[in-house]
Image 1 (cartoon, rainbow, N blue to C red):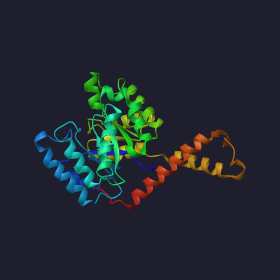
Image 2 (spheres, rainbow, N blue to C red):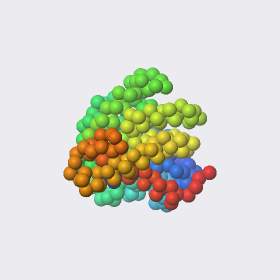
Image 3 (cartoon, rainbow, N blue to C red):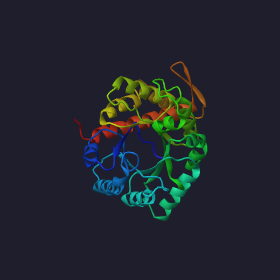
Image 4 (tube, helix red, strand yellow):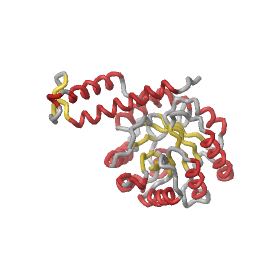
Length: 299
């Protein structure tokens, strides 16, 4: 699976044409055009038309574009899925995934309708059963036919369903995040952290981004454009991380180290697992730099 930055993943209501238009110039790595929670029931058919039109119009540049459909068992789910497949987004985000069957069933529809090869599936993990089943859900990623690429935490729904308190240190949330992350990594999937609701609180937001990155998250879902820039800063590899990674790569490239499992770099023991990590850091950094060169400035 291709490595790409997914630092900032911004939700956009599917019935807000102005927001989707402005998002084409935001420095977000990914955009989720939403037909589910952010759209009122009476407006869902219209929102579906607007999202499809936006996708066909294009203009999103290097940004990854994901369409979040309503669950298949809802009155809008199957129509959403077929519309999404026809519009060819980079990914389709399936809400409230609670068991592997939710992925497998959706993947069957995707294959049967001849979806574009680029279109992946993302899964929202936002229920207690989703957390319990996160290993089995992530295991769907082992089969290429399922197209599963990423898990997205729905922390607001998890807090509601569990009746836990939303505290600044996310004491109650950490076990859910950790379980999902380890399950995803076991099957080579990316994981995106949940949203931070108070978009005017940049200090608190940055702290939660740092917390997510420390846990190992690839990025964070966002609810407001003002959160994009600080999120990108936190989830980008630092200059020090990139420099150290390059040193590791160059050290293993030396002929005398070609067959070694462990070497010393500047007095530190480095294993081949660190080489894998280093290559990912450099790949992500290169992708971020390339992306910044081709994107328009935003104001």
